[in-house]
Length: 124
Image 1 (cartoon, rainbow, N blue to C red):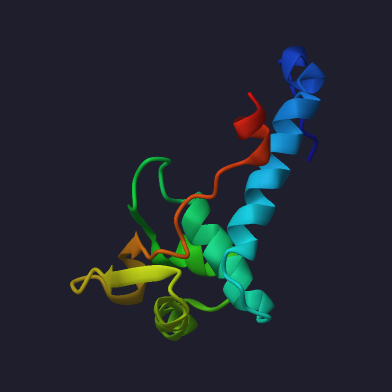
Image 2: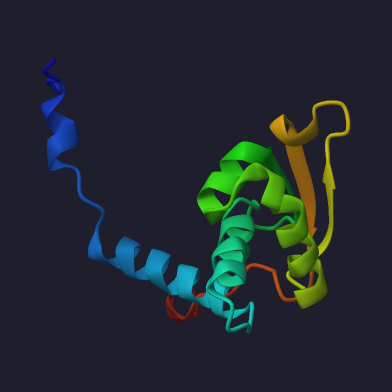
């Protein structure tokens, strides 16, 4: 099987350096807000903060997608969410009761999970 990209414009698109800097700065600030030595919690914190719209403190996503991003099986996601609540990253979370682990999870960010302000954005 061979795949060919027909839109040559896609091959020439590269994010601008300021965009990459802003994204890296934001990701590091988001992950560092977890203030934990547990890399799994830091990765999960980054995942939930990134999935929460800017200016909002709550979000919804498919449980299996979030579990995959965090590198855990879907069955291990509820204990991980409880650890995020204990760390102050999430205030609350809830899984859709009718669909089990294949459904959606909703959450509300805690005080340590709020979107970080970027130093690059502060300079602009």
